[in-house]
Length: 570
View 1 (cartoon, rainbow, N blue to C red):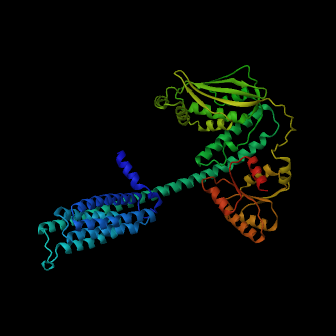
View 2: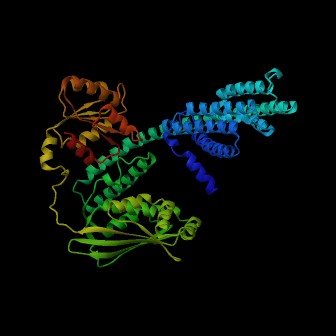
View 3: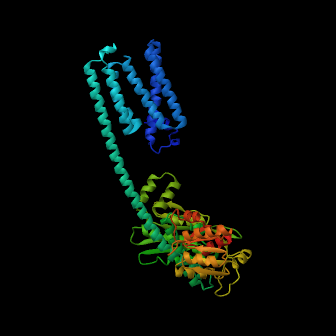
């Protein structure tokens, strides 16, 4: 089989450079094979007949060798399959008929020529192949049944001539039946492909619709939660807000995975770095899962300072996803999980902590035993366990924090462990009650403060959310409920930046943007337009950019991401 594969590779070389629009790759490879085979055979016949001093056949095969070689080289250089295939079939047709006329063919040779329909169909296709078959058949019959006055005495008996005719017709009918079956099979496959395309389109439309419906309210939750988290509240209320943020971030990533898009992923998520109590953060997260069917123990080394500086939301995200997936995959009625936290390293500024999550509830799962026995390397086992237990999200979160999750499997335990690095507790000034924080650079904040913004959004709740988020950051925000209103406002006022929704009644965001760009061409001006949309499937961003928008942000998004994009384009 390796030998055959090697031949196929040789014959398929440069096929990818040929326009295979009307010819399959197999057909082109077969044509290469027949050319190479014919050149080799003709070369051997030419040499043999040269030494046998058979001048007529020697000259005939030599001429055909030169034509075939030249045609093959021409095909390799110019990639013109249509011309080369016609020349190949025509030259061999003339050679076959000529050998009959010049009495250079034996009885076996005549019968071999009856397989000509296969050659013609293979390289010329059904329609042209049948035309070539007809002309070749007429030429052969004329030559075989030449009248006696030509003084050419053929050594073929009438039975051989009739056998040739019968064999030729058999091959001709056979190849046409085969071609008919092939066409019917291809037509059936095309019907199935079309049906699958329609199903795929329907699924994409459904996913797009669901994604749009989920992203809009989810975006409101993200923005409002972020705003509320910046208020100076007591620790218990702050912990509840952090839990909502962690759950929301996980949900955002689930939606992004559904649409196979990562425009808003964990890397772009806001960091909620602050002083926080590690033990209470983990305990409050674990309490969400504590019931009569689960027992989760937490052991934190007494040497660890509980108050550290970092992102408690990310910690909650990790443990929410990790514990949820362990409980979901465990088939044991009474579930037991142990969480250990130990110090890995300690400097004046930083502390590295080793987190271990252990359970024996997963040991009896058949798939886990299979992975343990089949995967050879530690890395392969690690990736297989993460995929099986649906812990890709946990892995991504940990990696954004500079760590990596490892899986340790022993006869008694199934252990996850990862190392995270934190700053030690920082002394930060107290903020005034109810003051909303922003991460805007002072110099850039002045530019943003002077901006007049046009918000094009048809959803009233979305309008309120964006207005609430931006009111302290910009000079003014005007609202247009659809594209037509946006054009009217754009024509009567000067805006520094436009935030554009896509799906709107009367006139959508794409058409509105195109009309704005058309107006600007006559005034030699340019207003930055940022798409803010729940359309987040592959291709949506490209469509927005192609329409003339400067940037794109999909819902749900962090308000800091929007502000940074606005500052970038102002």
